[in-house]
Image (cartoon, rainbow, N blue to C red; front, side, top):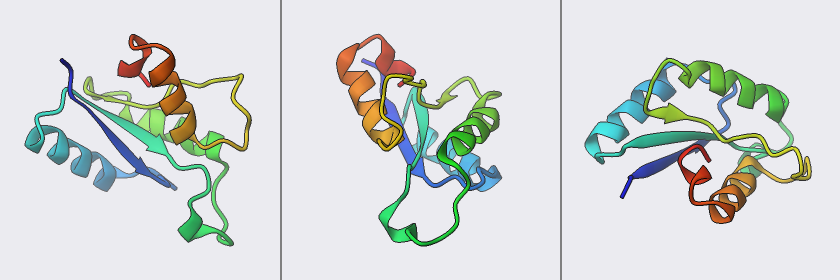
Length: 103
């Protein structure tokens, strides 16, 4: 059984600190994969100016692309824009066990 960790955050922007923390968690928790999941609009940051969620997802994908154990959620064009990446990731994982590894 593969061990997958979900690392959620605003990632506005994603930076080396996120990557270092994810690698530490991967090693320490013996994870096979760490999936970075950018938050839609976190409740503790309402009223603050955030980079568009789609752009943050793109930046996160660029940040993790060089690490074989890191990933980010697959896009779901059929998911409503108001739903957070967490919801889409969970829906995707439930819909297909094979997609759970890429979330």
